[in-house]
Length: 75
Image 1 (tube, rainbow, N blue to C red):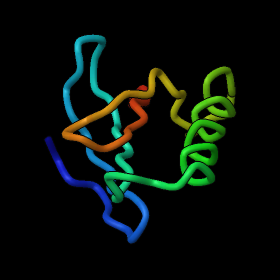
Image 2: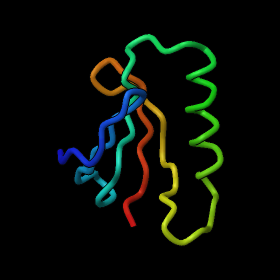
Image 3: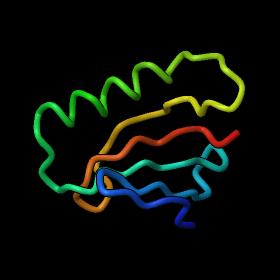
């Protein structure tokens, strides 16, 4: 996995997934608040069907190494 960006709320990686390259956004906290989880879920929902050049579509939400993550298509 390649580290792309690190912030105080999340870290972004690029990796080769089963359906091609993807970008993972992983929350920094192992136990985020309900509000932080809701924001993360909203981010996934907004990008799921969005057809805008340069915006990566959400693919899934899961737990990665004990932290919440969003997997996105890499375009």
